[in-house]
Length: 153
Ligand code: FES
Ligand code: FES
Image (cartoon, rainbow, N blue to C red; front, side, top):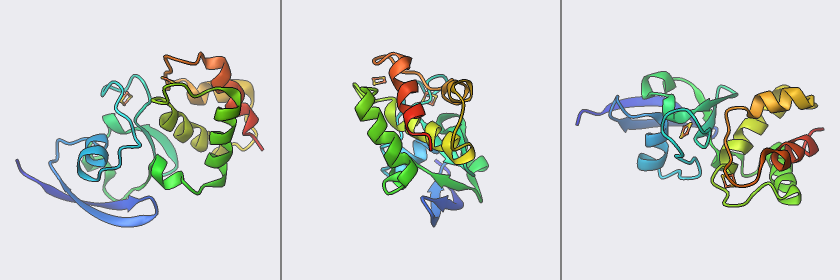
């Protein structure tokens, strides 16, 4: 397999990764960099479990090929470990019972962080729209919505 070098910022640190050009960002994160907080739910852009921030936008990493990553600024859920907004979201998820199996949670935290960074006090509709691409099989969306609304400023 042919490998190529890709340079970008990952969780606030410059990084160079060697990967096959056909790899997606999700494959690189999980299989090469061992950052398994980003989940693989469907591999085809339907569930949002693989959401990361690319230049502050919530993006499905399973649909992002490495060519698109070059020179960007990427944050994964590991990079939000000490982020106060993400921390508020995490606590609200627990308080509202919005976590069961937890598989969708990293993606939802990323989508919520992107929303609240852009719009610290979003409306209900704006919040629903921001979470539209993230599926959860366990909790029902009411608890998730309540949690994200609770984490607003
Ligand atoms: S794994 Fe990427 S959208 Fe489902
Ligand atoms: S908590 Fe299980 S998929 Fe959302």
